Image (cartoon, rainbow, N blue to C red; front, top):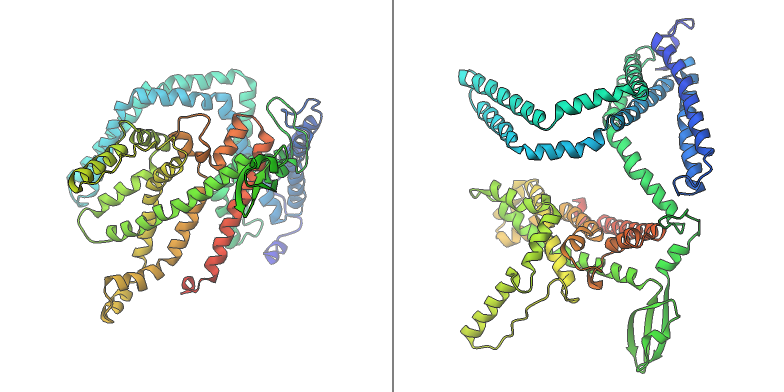
Length: 556
């Protein structure tokens, strides 16, 4: 690449796009410096986030100026790095201007109105379904069949007509006129011009690869990054940014309406503080601990009661509930998934239908399914207690025993409520795990089963000596994803249990985090809980990876 650059005449004129981009970089530098200065001049509390966030935002606002200055110098030296920096600047400016333009158009606010209007005219979507069915039917015909072309044209016509009717009755015309009316504001024209200008400039710079001596490998690299850019931008805006903010807040005493003050590790100290005390057997366990500690548990050894306490006992109780939830979820969602995948991997008729049926709970909305399960768990009219009553009545009448109908309080009994959550979560996860195991089964070479059959192995021996070892990587992945899902459980207890406050036995770590942050508005403390939970998930995942590396079965 260097040799190709050196072959160009030193006095060769710059392409017009580069000259325009250099001038544009000067405006970017000026705008970035002005934005940075404006941020640093804010005398208020910077959106109630404090001075550290203000300094960080100012430094981020300065990054475009630094990148534009580097791009300008590199372009003057005709270095490829300057071209890539210019592409990044123009592309990001175009995307951000697009977001601002959508906001000025009122698109984000109007989405609710449009979606509501579409739901009111949902009958027109039947035309789209009919168009798809006709097009699918045409695709099953021979290419030389004249009916195929006719069906395709009819399908396209029906689809276009249905879409136009749907947009018309959903208010698309009014929305278009509303967008046009926003151009009475000069700012809308300015943002539109910036978006179009930066987009065209990026497009022109893309076609200067030969001028900079671009290799095919470099071209493939920037094309790959271009395809990844929506995810990268979304990650930075909606994940990395809030993640850094929560990390900062975890070291503060941030609450609603107050400017956060840095308090160091005080939140983490309160979360993780434990104390062990001892009292006589008959004494109150609470007396063994300091005033600001609560009882977590106790054990009696001889004539002494040893008491374990914590400053935040509910946090530790939620961690315990979460771990127990995971330990129950793994066998309830992994073992049935293995046997279901074995059945669905057979050649019996209708297996494709049953694969879809078993996977449906994994994609169903948690809130909707939780409402159904809440009805199933009802102690009076629920089907679970009804089935148990019928079984108890059958056993008593048939075998002459005197069993008592337990009438289980599924969602209020402290000893049962966590198991009720696990049943719902396992029912939802087992379909997803079944699909993963099914993919693992279909990747096992058939020759292994044939060799085992020749050696005289029966079906159980084939399963134990061939299927399970070959499914080890899949099993490892399934267990990891199931554990992570269990450690992050929130939807099930929140949607299934209507009682507030949540029963202690059903309070999971994420729900406890949510309660501290959005009910008690202790954002700093809730952020600390979130990072402690992140550390727990990270350690558990790391341990699982270590165990997998030590297992020689995965290496085969």
